[in-house]
Amino acid sequence: MRLRTVLAAPLLLGAAPAAAQDHSGHGDHSANDQEEAQPQADSETEDHSRHQQAPAPFKLADMTGAPAMDHSMHQVGDLPSGPPPPEAFEGPQHAADEIYGEAAMAEARATNHATHGDMKTGTLMVERLEARLGEGEDGWLWDVQGWYGGDIDKFVVKSEGEGEIGGDLEDAEVQALWGHAIGPFFDLQAGVRLDLEPETRSHLVLGVQGLAPYMWHVDGALFLSDRGDITARIEGEYDQKITQRLILQPRVELELAAQEIPERGIGAGLTKIEPGLRLRCEIAREFAPYVGVEYEAKLGETADLAREEGEDAAGFKLLAGIRAWF
Image (cartoon, rainbow, N blue to C red; front, top):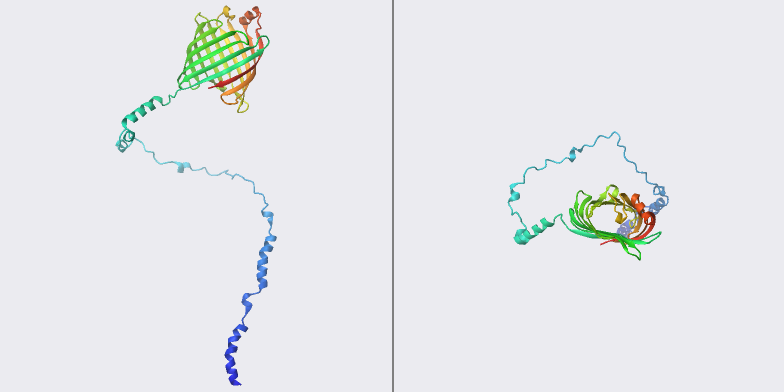
């Protein structure tokens, strides 16, 4: 009996740890379940009102009474002064000669000196090419000018004329002018004018053309004819943008004479005024058809001469034409 006990003791001692294994270390699985369920419950009960809270309105900080900013930190140190250091002149005067050759660079420098700030440009502007419909005869008109040159000096050509639709050419003239800049916005113009109709007559021309205050384009000239007659013409127009392509242009033209010119039906003084309004659509910047209305009135002695000839001294005209430049 005792021997059996001694033999069975090791077996019992070996089996005891397994039988007595304490699973308390695993803890209560219900606790794990509770821990796993807790975040879900917390997420379900989370207060979403914080996500819906509107941001606080932006307010500038109250700087009343704040000390003045010290700008001394923005000051830079002493700037270098005096002539360049001697090392700046140790190299060749034209370093590019060593790469491209002296002859090639001499030609390039000469071209640069000749063209710098003196670029030549030119344009041809058809200001008005229009039909004029009114009481009595219907007519047509052209007003063209072009120029070629630089910022200071340029050659200017102008031409105007009008006639009756289906009839004869009534007035036609050509001007050849030299334009010289007398300010940032104005040129002095001088040259000659040749009238082709109603008869051939030449004039000396002295005038100004440019951009006046409030963006008015002004063109004024004084004419001295080969017969001693002095006349003048002043034109002003303004481009009022309605849209980027729709432009309303008021325009007025005045003509004056220092003496009577009976063969042309012109009296002394203010002889004619033509205020008008044109609405153009720039289909392209270089091409713009327009419609408009213009009032043409002969004044003073010129109006009297017109009435004696049985002509209307004043009247409205409907206009349709194009404005283009190249």
